[in-house]
Image (cartoon, rainbow, N blue to C red):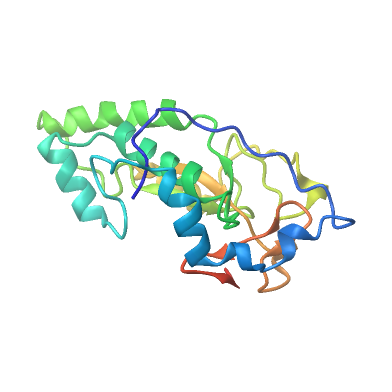
Length: 208
């Protein structure tokens, strides 16, 4: 389960400081097994379920909740933010690295679009408030594109990648950027920018 919404967008974590003497992030140690993490850590972080369950949800279910008025775009992104806060770092998952700094402002704009939908003035955009996790080699306005490399830690794009723009144009919202293998050169999800990321379904495996 996820924590209740707090409305707080966490700051991006500091960049990975290098390989020398920092072995822990690269070990699939016993304390990072899914069973130990779930029992010892995560179960204590989220004592109450959210108003809408996002686990394995679908676009249709999200949009149906929008239409009943039981969920807003701001509600939805906050639920995802809470799950990121709960699971991403303490479990060693380390897949989400940069939150969209304009996330709540973007959600508020889309809530305005939702109001027009509910009033019957427009039809529902195909991907209205569908949260996107963007691999860090796709240019996304307002967020660096590092390609998993410290050399590009501050590389700010001047425009969205074509794919990102097209998704935004039909209502999608960028939630965050994810880790990736440095320069996309391997399947082991290790890079100088972020360290190592793990598979959310099995923390003893790479995310690929």
